[in-house]
Amino acid sequence: MTDNRVPTVKLLINGEFVESKTNEWRDIINPATQEVLARVPFATADEVNAAVASAQDAFKTWRKTPIGVRARIFLKYQQLIRENMQELAALLTAEQGKTLADAEGDVFRGLEVVEHASAIGNLQMGELANNVANDVDTYTLLQPLGVCAGITPFNFPAMIPLWMFPMAIATGNTFVLKPSEQDPMVTMRLVELALEAGIPKGVLNVVHGGPDVVNGICDHPDIKAVSFVGSTPVGTHVYNRASQAGKRVQCMMGAKNHGVVMPDANKEQTLNNLVGACFGAAGQRCMALSVVVLVGEARNWLPELARRAQLLKVSAGVEPGTDVGPLINRRALERVNGLIQQGVDEGAELVLDGRNPQVDGYENGNFVGPTLFAGVTTDMAIYKEEIFGPVLCVMQADNLDEAIDIVNANPHGNGTAIFTRSGGAAHRFQELIDVGQVGVNVPIPVPVPLFSFSGSRGSKLGDLGPYGKQVIQFYTQTKTVTSRWFDEDEVGSVNTTITLK
Ligand code: NAD
Image 1 (cartoon, rainbow, N blue to C red):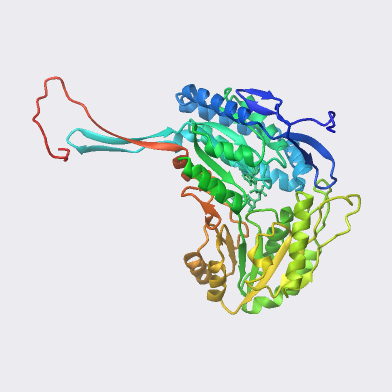
Image 2 (image 1 turned 60 degrees about the vertical axis):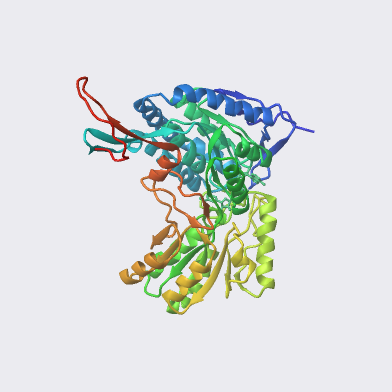
């Protein structure tokens, strides 16, 4: 039985928010209370095709829209996001669980990409070499590809959609977005604001759903490029399937990020940073520091680290002072609790056990409190799996090189950080570490959009990252023009060589 009082999330096709005709729906559930907030449709194949057709049609005019017109839409869009920040954060907290402050951070990190998109005039510029041969110039045009698509995860339902469609659209493409089916409501509010900012009909479309919709996007002959952010198994599948269908693909995937703590680090700052970066957002960040390697004398900091973790407040994201909110759903709760038990069974020392915390007023929430394991080894499931919960694995190393070896032997390459006051150690780490995003006394080194997100190795498939300069390359085709102009009375001779003179 479906409850008709529960609102439904709409599709966006050709500028209209429409009710899906599907028979398959899923509840969107507040993870702190289990309240059903809305129902999201799993779009039919016809609806996916209609969204792509609308984007294909809109591309004919959007691609020719002057760059200043495109830029001004994103200038207005960033203003609208700012004006609606609190409403967006509240929606996000209700469906995703993170604290209100963290939800604002989620929106804000996306807003920075929108600001960057409004500078598209400076970003989408080609190069020109004058007089490469007699009277010959060579220059490049960065031209949009056509219909692009984005598939996003549950953990940043504002930031990650904003990594994708603003830059794709600012570069002259049209877009089909497939948000996470677990928390699409804040994404849809951002989409409404994008239309209010002036994105024309058909330029941005949204379909909802799960594997069938994602596969439909990967296979669709009229989609030219796919951006994916999510787990490693799904990302690998999307990469293979969409590449096979001839598309450009970039996939940002799972992680296991290590913090390396040198004994000369600023102890206060380091411990606070570690606790925030591991347990914030209940560990559901792809850049969460989920492993700490204590080097040399820093091993003695373990009790203090555990003490600070224990002080964090576990509650609903709307409650003032909350540090750790709920996990996204019941399945995630059972999985994280199961992995904690596996850690115990495999012989790790459970220093802090966050299972089944008492959370007054939210007894049905998907809560796990801060959990800390010591004596973790690389063969344990808690080390090998991305737990995606508030669980910290602590390891030890005798020196920096040993710590670097541990990090480099891990298949993931999303982020890492060193904590030290030694310039020499930081420089050695920066040079030798095989991870795409490196923090020096910065626990979550996600680059601002002047740069690109640059996770590497097992955390990424595809050459170019989202946002920043790299994504201009991703969303455009470089065309090189070599030109020479003759005066009417100029005479020449036949040239059978390939050299330009
Ligand atoms: P997920 O892989 O389960 O889902 C991501 C998207 O793929 C969703 O839109 C979902 O509907 C779709 N999907 C799910 N199963 C599918 C299937 N079998 N076939 C096709 N599509 C499918 O990821 P999630 O749980 O929503 O997000 C958490 C994961 O995302 C973590 O692994 C996290 O590390 C990763 N992540 C990575 C980054 C990064 O930048 N590297 C950023 C955020 C999240």
